[in-house]
View 1 (cartoon, rainbow, N blue to C red):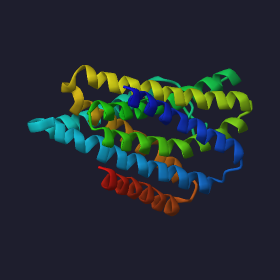
View 2 (view 1 turned 180 degrees about the vertical axis):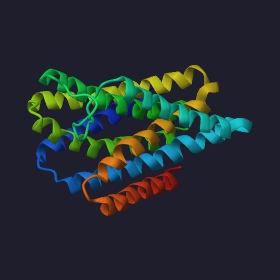
View 3 (view 1 turned 120 degrees about the horizontal axis):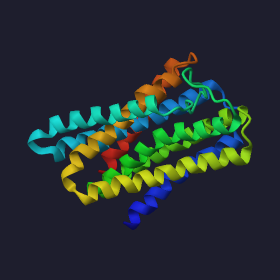
View 4 (view 1 turned 60 degrees about the vertical axis):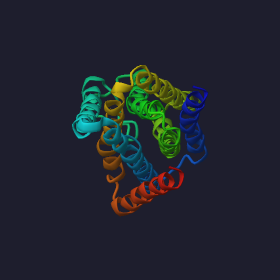
Length: 250
């Protein structure tokens, strides 16, 4: 349990660390932002496949493939429904054509909601990994999520500052999003610990949510400013880095 708690704090703190870097490098270009986010997407993609979806197949036994496919789609659909039902601003662009805030306080609230929507399942994914009992694999998943949280924390600072949000409040928002991942990690761990029977589904569910975030949010964002080629190679580098890490430490 101590390992889980320390890891949860580490995953959340990575976002805070990234936000501090964001304050240091305020004028981040679109190209740099796209590259680091694509790298983060590659890390998440590798972690979701190697650390969540493939183990789901292993633990699922005879019906592993059906459980895994179901879990992936249920995870993606859940995030899709949340995106539809909860008004929010896209966390990187600050734009949502379906909903526009009518006050500064609403704008801040919608930023928090948007980031929390995507950070909670990332935390759950880290917690589910620990619930499987494979500590080395769980640490790789958590490490991958923490690694992608750093550039993610960096690139959310500038849009909030440019939107007129005060620096101290911007840092507070970033800290809250990190805390959301701590909560998600504990939820994922305890959910699987209560009943190991749900482990295969929980693993694939977490993997599905991460795949949804990568495809729906991260890749479109990184390909929207004319930096598709650099972003693609950055994603491949992130993916292969996690692949190498998994091979060495598993």
